[in-house]
Image (cartoon, rainbow, N blue to C red; front, side, top):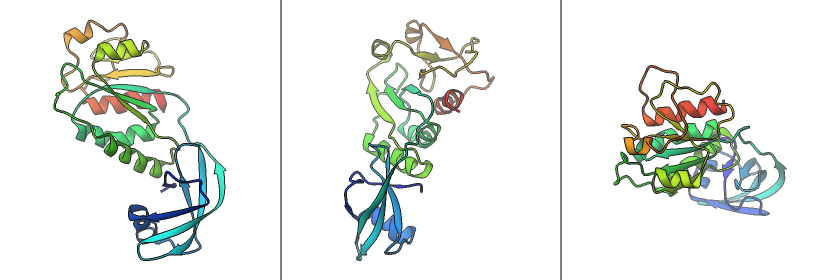
Length: 220
């Protein structure tokens, strides 16, 4: 891992237990006197702590120094993603985070199953673990939107990814993309679109595959 997340990072001392304790002392086998980098993922700083005291269930760490080092994607991308099975979202989320997606708005589209409910506490934990692995220094924003019409009222520069012969010449300056659910958009939703693109592939992509593909085109 590139760092350890702790919301209190930046204080003179940290008391760690539970998962962080097990990770540092039992998984990584850090010893007393060793230096470990931490982030609070709010201020862009890496905080370097020395392990000073270790007991059977907790450890006390002392701040040695800090370094301002933001690790962020060079461009901004906001995905407006019609809700699919949360398990598929959870599986794709680390990849989208590593690619540098800044924000995801989950939308209940006409073909989204209404019984799908997202656990944002679980999604946040997945994102934190991903950031610790890839080094990203900020947390992706997450929100829900009631429907496509409401999304278009909130954001007026949406590019809709759909089955289309028209493909953007370049995705470099795209900042906001809407991705449909399994089964695609309904005719009523398509009637609202003012800007549509396809992907240059003969295959039909799953919703999560399309999310990853468009994110790679924009950000990598």
